[in-house]
Structure formats: C-alpha cells, structure tokens
Length: 393
Image (cartoon, rainbow, N blue to C red):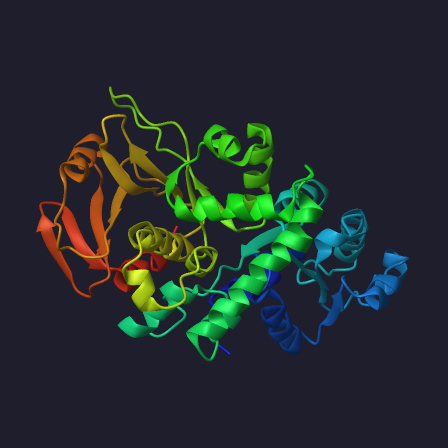
C-alpha cells in the first residue's frame, strides 16, 4: 500500500477534535485509510451502505453510547444524514464525561450536503480532512512514474493496475458507475446517462477552458440551468474543479468566468479514449491535461488556507495559477508548461507586470531549478510540490 499523507492529518485532527470528516471522491482510498486508523485505535467500523450496519443504528444513541470509550468510524455517512443530530448529542454527552477528542471518524464521497449538514449540526465539534487522488509526493520521483501518474491518474486502483489497458478499463467502469448510480442520486434534473456522458466528455475536450453553461447547453439541447446544476454536482463529488478568476485591482478588463478542470487526469484520458502515453503525447489535449495535472498536484500539496485562482485579461494576458498566501500582500504566480522549448510569451510577461508577484514560477516536466528572468524561476513539478508542502501557516 502506498502511504498517504492524509493519514497524519487524520490522526492529528482526531487528537484535537471530537469528530473528523474525511472527504474525497469514491475509490480514492478513504476506507483503506480509515481501516488503518481503526487498527491503531481499536475502533468500531460501520459501513452505512450495509443493511446490517444500518440496522445497528436504528436507535443510534442507545447503540453508540456503548462505545463512548472507542473511536467509531462511520463510512458513507452522507447516506444517513439524520445521524448528525445524534452525533452532536453524543459528543456533548462525552464531553461531560471527559471524552473530548477522537470520538467519530466519518467518511463521505459528496461534499455538498455533507459539508452543509455537518457544518451546521456539528459546528465547533468537527474538523475536515481532504483525501486527494495519489500525487507526485506519494509516488516515486522518477520521471517514468510521474508520467504514468499523469496518464493513469491518481485513483489507486487505476495507478497500480498491471497494465495501461487494465487501468483504462478501471477508469471507464468508474465513469460508468458515476453515470448510472451516483449522479442519478445527486442530480435533480432527469437527464439520460448518454447526455451526461456527452457533457462530461465535452468538459474533457475543453479541459482548462472557461465555463460557458449556455454554449454547453446549446450543444446538448438542454437548459443552461441544468448544465449548471450538473457542474455543481460534479464539483460537489470532487470530480471537477472550478478555478475562479483572480480579483485584481488593475485598470484592465478581466475575464469573470471560472476555468473548469476535470480533477483527475486519468479520468480526462478515459473520457477521450487515450489509453497509452504515446497516444497522450500526440493528442491535442496533452497541453491542457498536463496543466490540470500540475495544478491538482500543487493544490494537493499546498496548505489549505492558500487561495487559488487564475489571471486573464480580455486582451489575452494570462497566468495559469495565482496563489494567495495568508499574511502576504503579494501573490505567487505560477505558469505551467510541459517543456521550456517554446520559451515564455508576452502574455506571461504582461501578467507578471500586472500582478507584481512576490515570487513567479514556471513549472515544467524537467527536473532542475534555475532563474530564467529577474524574479522568475523555472522549477520541476516535484520540487514545486515540495516547496508548497513545506510552507507553514
């Protein structure tokens, strides 16, 4: 098993809070991580997809009071949201008995309702930890391993598959499961699975593009509000990222629409039928796929208080990623390039002039780190993730 960086975060959170929510998409390894925690804590594990375990919680307060001295792990809790009020009562009872930390570890694959319900009901009693797909800090630093991670994506079963073909089959089944089960559960509008697949595939073709619900709706013959609801759902299921535009105080006309990325590069490639690295290297989506892959790795490594956005003017001046660090008046500017062969364009130089960043980086596939212009460094992906992971705030 590949050690996950989130394991230490979960253990630390359990040591200071009564409840901890571990959030991430399906198949990302939440249950595996939770069972590792369970072994160390002699915890009770309940899978709320199981009818037998749900039956145990018909009277949750009566049942769970018996385990006040043990950690209780509740998997797939978004299926039983009524439990949150009972957990609040049990946590408050435990506090009166001196049990203030490490009571419940709850796992969920959907952030929308879970965050709202947990945040409202367990305010002051819960801490949230995100589990991302595997990233470059969790796998070998070798270039071939990084490229395999880019091609296959970070879902453990996809990355660790015996072959590229097996990995592609896993990801195609993963997509089918979401279309036929999970999205049908969360999307309010009645949309055929084929239409949802077409929309998801269109987002893959437009990886890193500006979100235009109206254009997508016209292509699919559905309404723009329906597209927006679907995109909201994909975001809430941790499958896409809407990167907001940077709110800069400059006298220029700025783009106001968010950029949209499918968060896992392996899912992008599965939607587009890209099964091996040779096909990926020559595909038109390679550049934006690499951009999304780098951004996801950087944000997985960055401390959670860092705010991420992009910068683009109507004239085309652009910076792929703008990072705002707490306590710093000037942001970090990040440009993503697969190779430095093409050099830096006018748009990058204009964005640096507009943003006046504290530090500017060009993140590329090559290892090494060197200054390419005053205040601008070229840096490898692994080195940049190490830099962000080492920030303390």
